[in-house]
Structures are given as structure tokens and as C-alpha cells.
Length: 220
Ligand SMILES: [Zn+2]
Image (cartoon, rainbow, N blue to C red):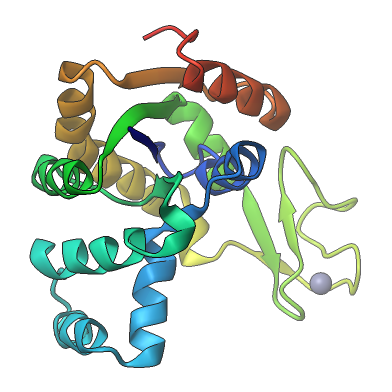
């Protein structure tokens, strides 16, 4: 059975960073749904054109288009030994489609690590960013504060909060993620493959815990 891993985590949990670290350690390709979309749009493939039609209308790309893209990507030779999936599946329907497809290539979703971080910590991480108007230098009020509050260290220009970095926007993003992902988490929990990992720790420690959970020694 070829091993596939689905990595889950809310915005601010460091999922992208961890996906890179884990895929490097396990020598598995990091398959990000965002990258796949961008590739299809850029190359103007049939699927890409189909997806663009929905995106341009401000609509969600339907499951069958997304699933077809993922199928095509996972069929490439670099995935023959498995892969780490990031951003897909998003719903139990997509998860079912993935299971069906993987069974055709003698693969299975072996582990679903979920990086858990309390909402207040996510908000603190994501909403603390301040950007300089002049050159886009980024500071964080807690993790990388400017020497003088509200002023860029590099060029002395004024710091402001981008719309995406405001607490209200961040809160909404987190709630949308939680709402959309709860059914998927429940789905994988029911299938006995969900592995919750404490995402409040340092990046290095979380990587270690994730690798441990993927060995099957983590708490389930
Ligand atoms: Zn600056």
C-alpha cells in the first residue's frame, strides 16, 4: 500500500512550513492544491480553463474539476511512492473521491495529522502583522516588533495593518476554515487516521511531533 498523508491545520498553524519540512524528511512530494490550480491556470489546460470560468464568476470550483486536477497530479511518477497533500481534500465528498482514486492505484490515506492551535493564539499570530507603506517591510508586534512603535526600522516610513491582517478579517478566516473543515476532521477521525498535534510549540518541535505521529506513535 502506497502511503498518502493529508495535512490539516487552520490559517496561522504553520501548515505550509510544516508540509515543506515533513515532505523533505520523508522524501515525499508536497502536493499543494493551490500550486496545482496555479499550474493549470498558467498552462491554460482544459481543466484550468474550466476552473477559470468559475473563479472569474466568483464561484467555487466544483468538486469534479478539483478532483480531476488532483487525480492527474497524483498519477505522475513522482507520486508513485506516495505524497503529502496540503489543501485537499476540503470536504468529506472530496475525501471519498480521494479514497476511491487511491484504491485504484493501490494507495491509501494512512495518516491525517491535524495541527491544533487555539483560536486566540492564531489571532495573535496572524493579526499582529504590520507592514511599511514604503517598501512592504513586515513586522510583528510580538515576534518581530519594530524598534519604534508604528515606524519602519529600515526606512522610517509609517506602518499600517493590511486588510488581511486585521483582527476581524483574521477571525472570519479562522471561523470559515473551522466551519468548513469540521466535517472533514470528523470524517478522518471516524476512519481512525486523524492524528492531532499541538501546534502551539516551536516550529521545530511541531515538526518532530508530526513525524512521530506519522510513525503511528502519536496520540490519536
Ligand atoms: Zn520599510
